[in-house]
Amino acid sequence: MKHNFTVRQGALDGVEAFLSVAQHRSFRKAAAELGVTPSAISQSVRTLEARIGAVLFIRTTRSVGLTEAGERFLSRAKPAFEELVAAGAVARDLGQRPTGRLRLSVPRAVVPIVLEPLIASFSQVYPEVEVEIAASEKLVDLAAEGFDAGIRMGQFIAADMMAVRLTPPFRFAIVGSRAYFADREMPRIPDDLRQHACLRMRRSNGALALWTFNDNGQVIEVAVAGPLIAHDFPTMLGAAVEGMGLAQVPKPIAVDQIRAGKLIEVLQSFAPTGPGVFLYYPSHHQMTPKLRAFINHVKNRSSAAGKARSNR
Image (tube, rainbow, N blue to C red):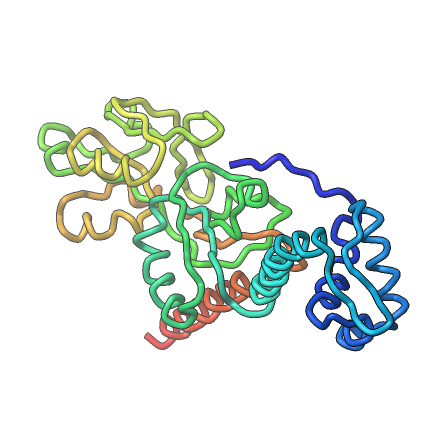
């Protein structure tokens, strides 16, 4: 919801001085509270009165009182100013410790295999941070759309972003169901895919992704055809489980179905390796405490996972 409003330059000048004088009924005490001279307080109030166009105080040599205009101004200005002070305190608090809402843009496939365990452990350590996950394949502009960070495979991250590795590089697997292979021969080389139904994915830029293979160290790309075009890996994987065709997906998201016998991996010797999954975010000078805490948590878990692998 957009709010169309403008604040005239200097509109708040003198308000704090007015409120202090109104509270203490004394220019001298207001000056002591705000750490300025009585003449400075008096000048601030005169400037405010001139800008408003009404006298706010009745001044005598012995006392200071509010005019009717001053009473009405006080009734509206005091709660509004207190809200401004509270808003500043909230913003300052968000700037000093990990708290508030952390918004992440994440592909659907990454959520169960990478993000869910990471978020669970992070939330235990930082209960004051509320994590919001926007699962989408769209390559969003983080700053423009209000995200603190994103998670993507390495090849899709812009060069001007900072990145932290979440997973090691992983293979892409070509998989099909036992039902699909019941009346078909398994492909032996990538060229055999011309005889198969292949499930394809449309990138966020609108292009259909080619299937990639590693042929003795040489990267080759193959244009395939089939009955389904999806926009994310989980949809392709689900269609492969249902026997619609072959799918090329990151192996980590298919490994459970392969182990359970729901899918069969083919063309393993041609399987390419992807760069892995990364957390990415704008440069360091824009980092908030909640994002810094999340990045450190990611790094600590990645380091612990690396040590565990090396000790096996």
